[in-house]
Image 1 (cartoon, rainbow, N blue to C red):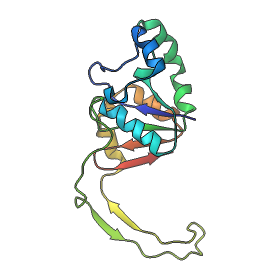
Image 2: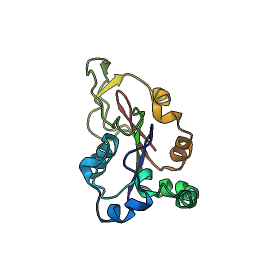
Image 3: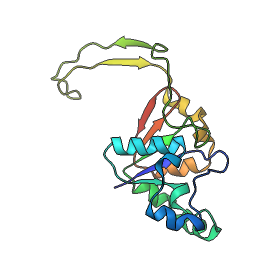
Image 4: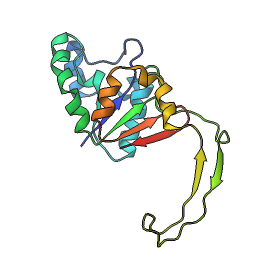
Length: 172
């Protein structure tokens, strides 16, 4: 089982798989040399208990075009068979990262009434606080959604963990 990363390249990424780096990368990749978005994706993957992370620029040889051309038709399958996709939504390039600082007081909260454990749809426990902040529609304004590939990635991924500018969204 593996996780995929969906991200904006921005300009040309300094860390890409090329014909001359295949042998080196197949042995190891120096983690500190990875850009922040990749480092964050590695941390998320490990924290959630997964061992494998698929990143397009590190898993598809970027030169010559023949490897790239042979892999493009497989992209849907790659995303479809992943456990989930990490979407670095707010980052305009691989240096933007997934995580962000935010003002924890920027959104108002309301307390929901405790629900009866006998309710069919709620079993035990207590309903907590809900924040009224940006909606998932706000995600569409973030840099990741300017990429054409995001339509296929979003459609084919069974689950997505979106890292936005102020919150994290989960989509199934």
